[in-house]
Amino acid sequence: MVILFDTYGSADSRLHSVFLYHLEHNLRAKTSGLPYEFRALESILLSVLSALEAEMVFIRNLVGGLLAELEDDIDHDRFKRLLHYSRRLASFQNRAKLVQEALEEVLEQDQDLAAMYLTDKRNGVPRQLDDHEDLEVLLESFSKQVEEIVNEAENIQSNVQSTQEIVELILDSNRNALLALDLKVSILTMGIGIGTLVAGVFGMNLKSHFEDHDYAFYVMSAAAIAACTGAAWIGVRRLARIRKVGLSNGNRKKPENRRWNLLSLRGRRPDSWS
View 1: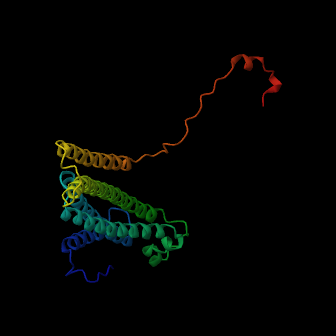
View 2 (view 1 turned 45 degrees about the vertical axis):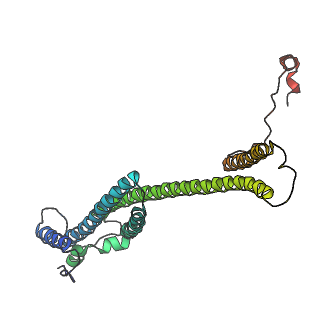
View 3 (view 1 turned 180 degrees about the vertical axis):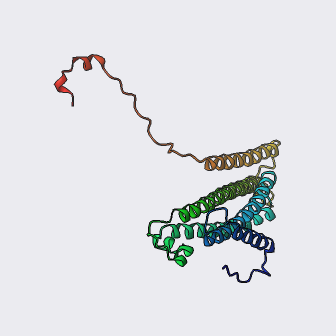
């Protein structure tokens, strides 16, 4: 017999209903050639596999739709949803790996595999420890299907991580652009401040004898504008030089071109080569 515990009132009643229907149908059918316990085990493994596949399809649709949305626009809510889906996908991947590891652990135990032939044990049929081909084929088929689900989950997780890295790079690039803009504004403010310094010096109520000259105003105005422009240009140029990132050192010496003397090579003896 097969005894089921807490089959009603579960969170996913549809999967349990399908499991009960398949279990009842599989236990009554005797044309498969499998003993009673293996037919029950097949229904149990099929129910577990169906649950994993259903959750895999659901997560794949969620993640695929969100990644398509992130290609058009990146905002805080979508990035937050991506992190939530990533944690959910990691949890599902761990559960799928646990199922795979459980099947592989059973397949490695010859004594446990031989002890699972309950019908032969009830009828007193002796069985060797290595005589479990039918059960091994059944478990390996489900193990391969669970492995495919695990591989698909790993591929989706890799896509999610790649998208997260790309989003972080884009955000870092935007942040650097804002910082560069802030620095440019500060540099221009510094240049204007130099011109203001000149105006402030000549605005004091002190005699400098420059006010007696006819072209002093134009000369000092041109000097102030030149000082502002020069300071701003030097600052922006220095900022552009700092922002350049190179993978190699610019001070590295170039390799010298060596000229080989063909005549000297021809004149060498064979025993002189090292």
